Length: 149
Image 1: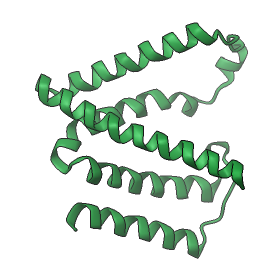
Image 2 (image 1 turned 90 degrees about the vertical axis):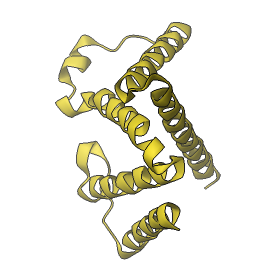
Image 3 (image 1 turned 60 degrees about the vertical axis):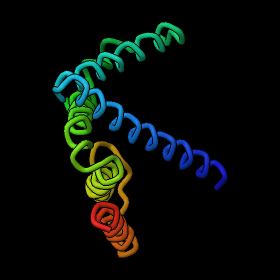
């Protein structure tokens, strides 16, 4: 159980980074006057950071056969990340950081419950239970409270 606590803590810290990212991208959007450029420059920063990290740790390159064998959906992370960055830059100034992130978490939860329930994309199947639905309902109540409370 202590190991789970570590992973949950790291996930919560990553969530804090997402809130900061949305806020900084929204501020850049306001400064530049265009969410598309804010998203573009944010993604350029991501590429630069990832490139520096890879140059520092120098991991072995994956086999070409492994790259070719990867299912098409394995390559959606980058485009989906770009859409999240663009959404944050566009929507955060309209809703505020807390409401934007609360809504993002709600959307993540719906998607995650479906992915788990059906065991999609090689995830272990976790049946949708009453307690999981109640937890999701509580998150959505939180979204409404954050936005309208």
